[in-house]
Image (cartoon, rainbow, N blue to C red; front, side, top):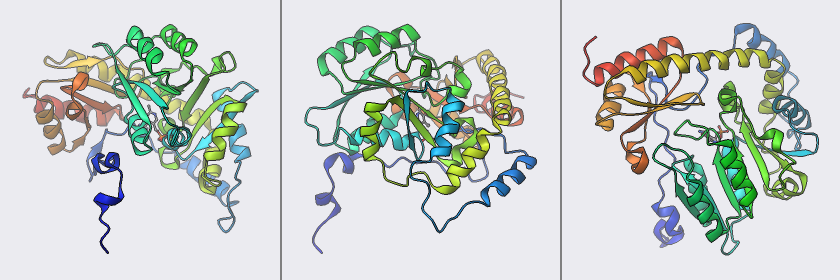
Length: 360
Ligand code: PMP
């Protein structure tokens, strides 16, 4: 066979690097914004019992109607909003960008640094992506956003609220201005809603171009892979055509339905994580040589000198966080730690002090 991958794939794909997830290998895993608390044993028992109704020989409900109803209640969605489910919100990003593939001149815009998947998926699909730098304090540069929106007339603007990897919430009135002034759709990505406790869902219906995306991953169900997009019916029924028919498998449908009937368990866990976030921030901010950035999510971004060395020092002590220094730009010197259990956070802080060269 003479065909080579170099001749087969588009240059954008050949240039891309696969989304790599570092192997945790028994390390304390504080790199992926997971909820560190397992399900209580009593819940596991009820869950396995509930799952016994699954019929794996049959395809799942293609509309996942029972789950959608539970999600509507969970996210308090307005009655006239439609819902689209994805295998994680990652898949929703893929579905909405798929709509622009082969659409000449279509542009997607997002501030940067932000969630890398917006740019990555756009590149895979050959959709033009414009990244607009945030201010140095990671706030939205509203003038630059508006200028770029006027210039590129993007079909979609993504705004992560709170933003990943910076952790901050953009100014809500700036977000509203962007929604009003964008000729295309604005997708407010509220992946970290359980920790921010603010949402644009109550604005759905007020703006014909507003869609809100959420996920159950950070609530504590990352392994199920379930995200959803809410917005006007006329938009979602078109996006729904690009969804593969049975994208939410039967175990995910049943497990998420069950989990949402025990929401209080996850709400208690996320409340603990929020309290731990405050404690961890205070400790991080008190360390000389560390600049910690306030967070409305379940992770904290911080800047150190010699970030690569500190990251590797943590790793060699068995603590895995995320090194953002290689991304450069505003993220130069930055590391991101997920808020874990109190014991994990203490282990992280001990390892960090040692990596920074502090005794004790
Ligand atoms: N949006 C943002 C802002 C994220 O940080 C993430 C996960 N890191 C996602 C979406 C995707 O989450 P999931 O696919 O697990 O729903």
